[in-house]
Image 1 (cartoon, helix red, strand yellow):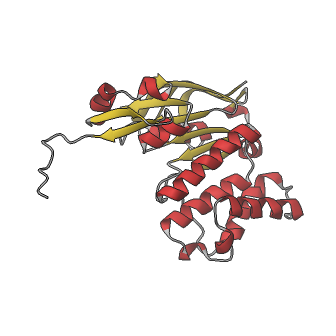
Image 2: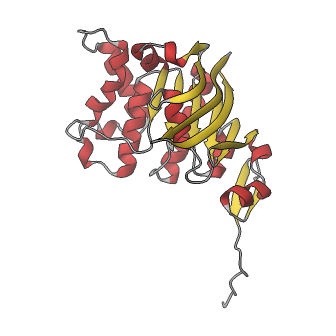
Image 3: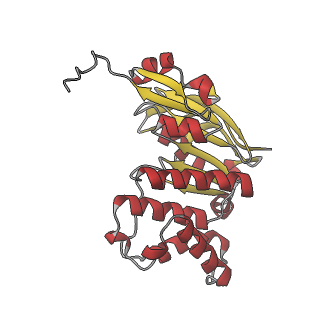
Amino acid sequence: MTAVRVVDVHAGYGGRPALRGVSAELRGGGWLAVVGPNGAGKSTLLKAVAGLLPFRGDVTLDGKRAELLSRKEKARLIGYAPQNPVLPEGLRVADYVLLGRTPHLGPLAREGRDDLSIVDNSLARLDLTGLAGRKLRTLSGGERRRAVLARVLAQRARILLLDEPTAGLDLGHAQELLELLDRLRSEDGTTVVSTVHDLTLAAQYAEELLLLADGEVAAAGAPAEVLTPDRLARHYGATADVLVASRGELVIAPTRRGPAPVNRT
């Protein structure tokens, strides 16, 4: 079943277009990485799908038109993590993650044992158990990013929209997060749509890539089809080799434009 379908979406800010005629489709349990140079419209696309930005075109989520979903239905279906979240700094980490359970509670209901267990599990999965009692304002940038993602995990949404989820994370935590998302797909059928700045990570974890340039689709398909030296030069202005690692994974390796440095040893 198709989990996310975007058809001819146009969106922008203050009358200035940021997306023009973007279309994409993703099956349930799939992973689509939206890539492209700065200003290509990646974050705008996620906001449009999440219903946070007016747009023209059609967005369908789990077979339902997005504009027909109630606020609560959408909150149960979609977990959205923005690139630059504004956090309520007076809260403790555990209390902030508990906010992810709000869509599953009645108007006057309080969280129960199951909700608290889900929060504990989300904290553990993102290596935050030891920071559960800390105030958000005392966390580093990477720790804050993990707290935001823990709140999204606690939401138990079927579709995750993640804007640069590895931004600010060191390599180890970035890999742990991406492996976790991959397990959620295989074990729970979770669908992932993410923007990813690191093209090597995008190629190694996402099933399909959507390359945006100047608000339009420049290429779409499997990572090996989308990430070619020619496209990297054309859309990123980059010189790079597309290598195949020992296990068949793609690696995007920037290459110097000038002569190699002289080895003086």
